Length: 342
Image (spheres, rainbow, N blue to C red):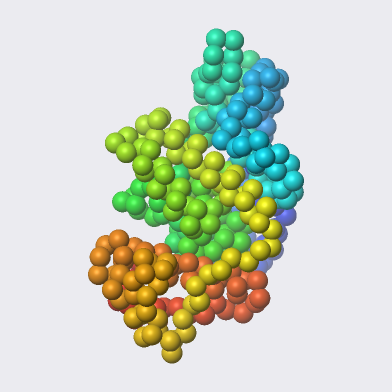
């Protein structure tokens, strides 16, 4: 969390520069004060998190260690756990951030008479060195659960629109995130915790980036294990968080072990090949043609998932090689599909 604060404060915008919000006004007459307040709040939040983690570590040193290895890393096999130490420095950093936030929110700490949820420990922590505002922020952090999100659109340097993959009926949420929005792409998927900051939604700090196919598999696992559960219940929250953390860690380890080996993926058709592609049989959608598949709800979802993966792959290619990604709207329009319904 502290590293994310550091990255944001490094980025400077001149007082007389045009404001990045698109208003056309100078930064000093538009969003400067609001941005100062946002960064100040983030510094305060990071300080609260550090104080709370320091207190927890000193009060329950053995319990915290057991919680991390038995809880956060508990689903990993011995070989997978040994691999964690050889992951990239960036991944190690993100693991530390995610463990820190997990300890403040969803962890259960071994104590003398069993396990105790960290939220109860903090509520009983008379010696916890936090102000009333700090305690409120910590409570707000705990009240906002992890969920699985799809990025619907991105405004680089400003924010993004996220949709909750576990609650598809919920409206999309606009998240203000200057730094992360410059590296994230439309249709990417990630686990995250959203919080209110003034009038905005923001990322809490922990992030669980997942490839689309892993995110879809994770969603299915969560839905199976929470069938009949109230999405607002503690049980739903625990199952969701546990499976999301597990899939994220296992995927990171799998990618590390796989190294630079390229995955075979279906070719993206050109406009001239559209008709042949639309009528051809594709194993990715059950050995049916896209035109035939879209006649059923399940087939329609499978085709839209394929088109999203095409667009995401093109966006990544353009980000890596420079230039603009190929416009694939002809695929959606040719099949009578709308990205707004995807």
